[in-house]
Length: 251
Image (tube, rainbow, N blue to C red; front, side, top):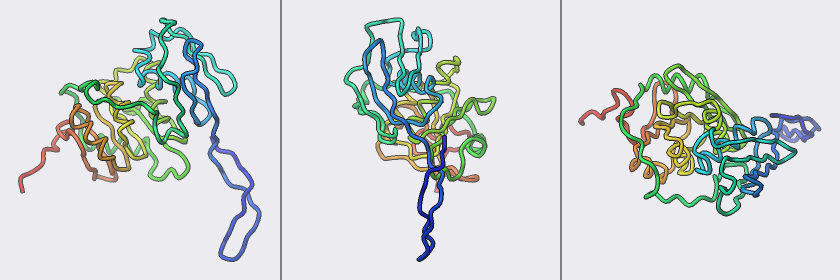
């Protein structure tokens, strides 16, 4: 995932040739039933999981049972589904996955996460400490956890791509998303909230904060959004009832 490339090291007035570790990046074209659906810049490796997660969160497929085959080629991945006429709408371009896709978020059509699933603040902190580095610097990390612990973990140059990868792993492995918590290293955006809702994941937590639109959408849909997880502290932006013992105390 990293490769050494030439660089110039500068220390005060001194400059010298050196080598730096750089995150690898590739352009990937996704084809669904022969149609070019999306182009993204991603980290190499784990492309089957990325494709499955992307198609699932974009609601192009409803689950692994709708995937007939996934074929990897150079800078291209082709997916055949059980419905040969089912493809995405307009072709999209995702640059490093940090801007998300170009999907318009129609809040009226988003699923509602029903009450029921909850976990403790201590569990969130424990999952974060186990799966998400405190400082990634060059790359984003995402993970999926359930009552048994960390289910899967992935890294990518884009935070949305990393989330697609762990969701894709869950799709291909038959994970029950309704009893999971998504974890990430970057800012929780509205697009990441939409992906969790598409997968019916009830909680997403990050070491970073959340955007205003992400919090607004989450409040209306039952998704618990937790940011700034560090040590024993965190900020709950939406639906704190999913955190055991997190009911605000009267002033």
